[in-house]
Picture 1: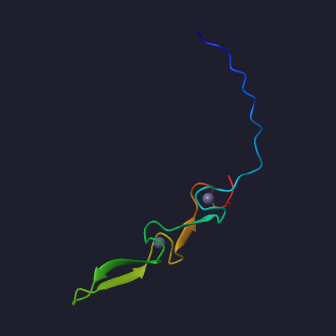
Picture 2: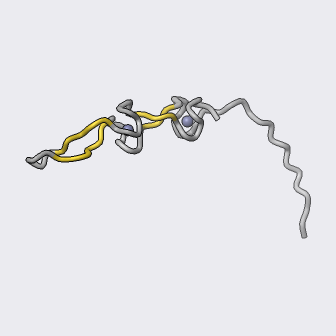
Length: 73
Ligand SMILES: [Zn+2]
Ligand SMILES: [Zn+2]
């Protein structure tokens, strides 16, 4: 048997702080893990050569994809 449920219609609350970036609007870059650099090659000694991350352009953070950089959703 199916009954109508009387839920109070939720009022759209004031924008809430983004759960992912916690209101920063920015999230650590996932490509470089927030370091701003990625190892792209190694030198002849096998040492990693890191260069600027293409994902965040060295900024270490990218615009949060959840809130689009606003920090609130
Ligand atoms: Zn990056
Ligand atoms: Zn966010």
